[in-house]
Amino acid sequence: MACESCLKGIRAQYVESDIWPSVVNVIDRLLSRPLELVDVYAELHRQLPDAQALDMLFDAVLMTAAFYNQDKINEARDARDQLKKTNADIARVAHQLVGLLHRRDDLCNTSAFYTGERHSIVDLIEEASESNPLFKAHLQERLETLQRKRPPKSP
Image (tube, rainbow, N blue to C red; front, top):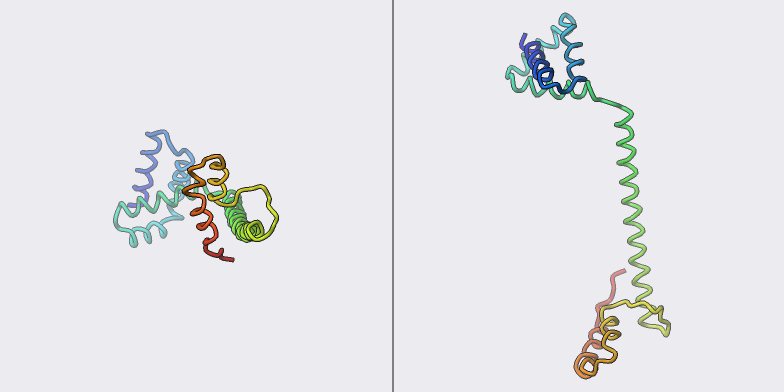
């Protein structure tokens, strides 16, 4: 049969290359049960008359049979779910942080209180240029105007 020939060819290739011993074991089990698999092989041969398609199917089936591990799949699914939840938590907290930063910025800019932290590039430039007379003469007033004209923050 074409299916058995395909399996024997895959087995020979893996044994010769000394790879995939677990897959070779699966192939040996399949080859040891020809009477049980006659109908399966006949159906595969009808559905996949192309040798390459049959080879690809057997590759997927053999790898799955050799390496399938439900516990590892469950662990991977749990990890994926935890990652999704963590990402959602990060997005929620980031959104809250944006609101808090805007509120702090508004309070610092509209009240007499100051946290000692810089909230804009203009603050940094002004602090760095305190002793620069050219800054005071040419740039300070323009930057102050720019800071007053900042667009309102989105909520």
